[in-house]
Length: 133
Image (tube, rainbow, N blue to C red; front, side, top):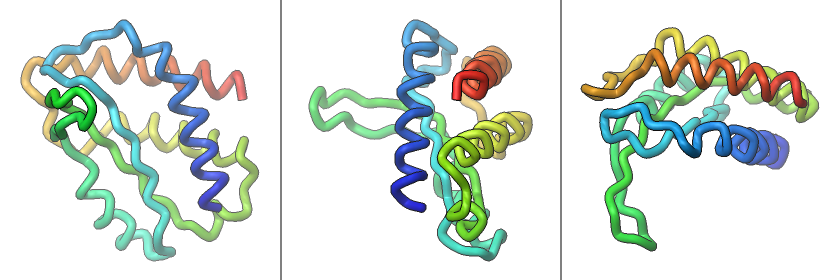
């Protein structure tokens, strides 16, 4: 499942990056980070693991040395059903789960960040991606 999940998330990133390359949402947020958590069949354990990723934070870019602020969203999944899915089914599931999660992101939105516009753009981008897979 690890390889399939890696393939799906890389393809999702490749598909969505051009859509967002010239967009600005304010709040000094530079990046969106999606993390798929599928480490345990215990749903509550996966949800606890997601808390570390559902946040706005920053890191120092190792190449440029500049500060990069990101908005992180984590999605919990039971790994057992994921292991039996095709990459297309897995991509569709992740898109649907992300669309649902955006309605209640469970994180503090930075002041000045236009979350509604970002959410609308992401919903559209995910719909386009789902049609293309």
